[in-house]
Length: 197
Image (cartoon, rainbow, N blue to C red; front, side):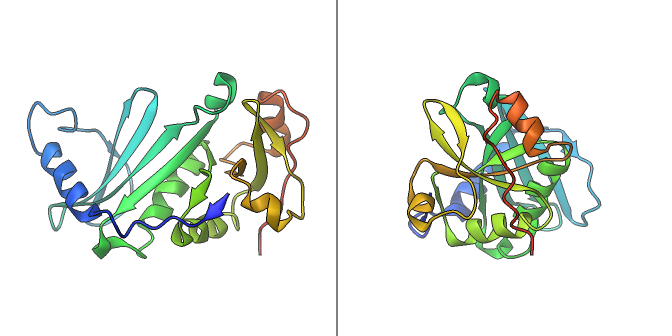
């Protein structure tokens, strides 16, 4: 995987503004979405499922705007059995809401709910920093994708192997262990990589 994603060319604030407009429009698929119970003040998490993917929207109710969203994508590159346990999250947050822990809170909600998260082949510096932070409290595995199967790389990981676009990270959700994931994936090769500090 590579840490080389830059989002400067995208107008994320405008994208989120359009999404929030749809959320206010009766009859739109985004209108009236159910909320996730949280203890957050001034923020509401709303979610939906479409085409087997999970969408979480972070709404700032005090300012009547969408702070950001996270999509937990299906992982199409691996077999359908693994697809049931792993999701690849991708987030976008308005500039006024970055570095406030909102993305981290959404990822933690998913992990606490028992979802296992797999990185994409590329990450931004901020996304990689988030994953390393989450690895302090959730088990982190390094894997490679070959022939629609996951294979453990082992530890320590070589820089050249890390740079391979087939290399991914997996964060284990609540109730999961490397052994349990290995059994579910019918693989004995997944081992824990301790990234806790």
